[in-house]
Amino acid sequence: MTETTCKKLQEIGAFALAGGCTRKRMKEVVEMIRAARDYRWVGVYKIIKDEFVILAETGKEPATYPRFPISQGLCGAALESGKAVIVGDVSKDVRYLPTFHTTRSEIIVPMRNDHRHVLGMLDAESDKLNAFDDEDLQFLERAGGLIAHCLH
Image (cartoon, rainbow, N blue to C red; front, side, top):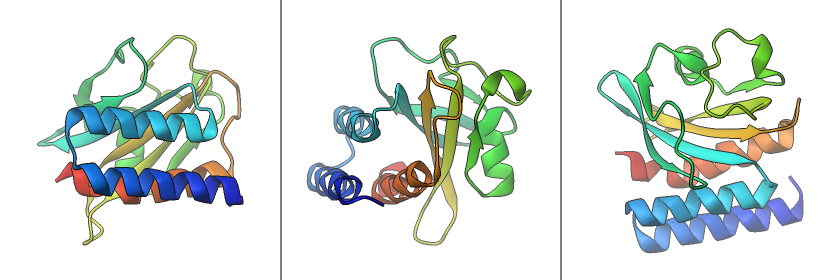
């Protein structure tokens, strides 16, 4: 990862650990994640019973699916595999649940507790095709690890 990306992660980690996990703080954290890599939208989904429920998201327009079954969407695919899912063109992936009509590509990263149990998903979207690379994956995995404690 670049030095700039590492510095952004340090800022996100310090902010997340310093202020607790209120809804307002989580909204600020996802905005920091969005701005760090210039994503169009970022959301954190928490697993509650058998659903993904949005805990925090960027922007003013709410996601089309603020809650959905854990068996659906790209989040469901990431939960099933236990691995991140990167889709370069969401229009070609039948698992995609449209959050916004302008989304072209998406990355979903499982967020785990200290026991490696998946608690939720960190979701980033772009209005560009093939917008996500290995640097994004590393960044989002580490960012997710820094804020996963807010999901239990």
